[in-house]
Image (cartoon, rainbow, N blue to C red; front, side):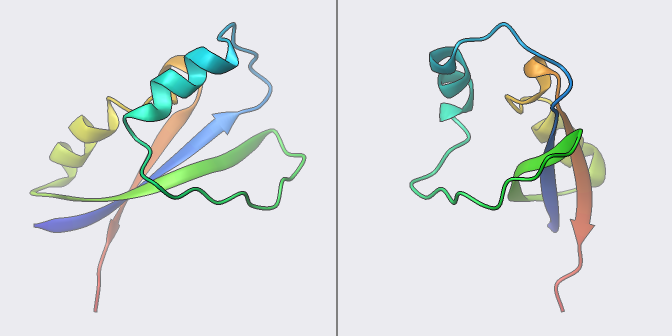
Length: 85
């Protein structure tokens, strides 16, 4: 198994028509019991979070990322393989 990091990026210049409740429902399946509020920056695109996943290949990691709730609201997911020493 390989380790991958899925980095969630939201384009802040794109406004979505989802209510707060709808956004919370979309992310519920991806959330665990801990959340961290970080420094907020005024940039066009920012990192909204990340997940660490294990999969057999990069292609399998892509399939996992396709269900990320940030995609329907104008964001995207960056996938990076991690090499743990």
